[in-house]
Amino acid sequence: MWRALMLALVALPALATQGLATPDPREMLADPAQEARARDIGRGLRCLVCQNQSIDESNADLARDLRLLVRERIEAGDSDQQVLAFVTSRYGDYVLLTPPFKPSTALLWLGPLLVFLAAGSGAALYLRRRARAEAVAPLSEAERKRLAKLLDDPA
Image (cartoon, rainbow, N blue to C red; front, side, top):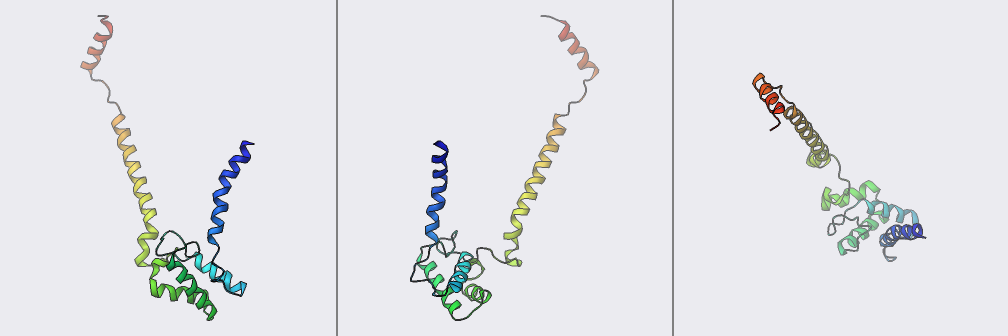
């Protein structure tokens, strides 16, 4: 009983979001192959209003305009690459959810690796310094005598 309830609670949000990705029937192309291409391209384009959603998922007016633009270009006979080139020529690489690797986006692609390397180096330095600080120097002769006196004296 509890397992079924937990499964339903986990699955419900996933099922609810499936309906969000359904385009307006007025936007859909008559040819299913072209519509599939348009949906595939739309999943790779960022909604410039929502910024973390694809135009396929967004309900913003600009996302709707971009979906229509993609469908117009597909109906005109453009290939997927030509459609993407057309959209990026107007909106820049930022419209792509997966921007290409080039000098202007190198930090975007290499940034996580650099942060990981910096964090690893910092952790290694911290652990090395901590190990050195924890190393205990041997007692001097005067310290041994004083310790022996303290341990022998029950006061």
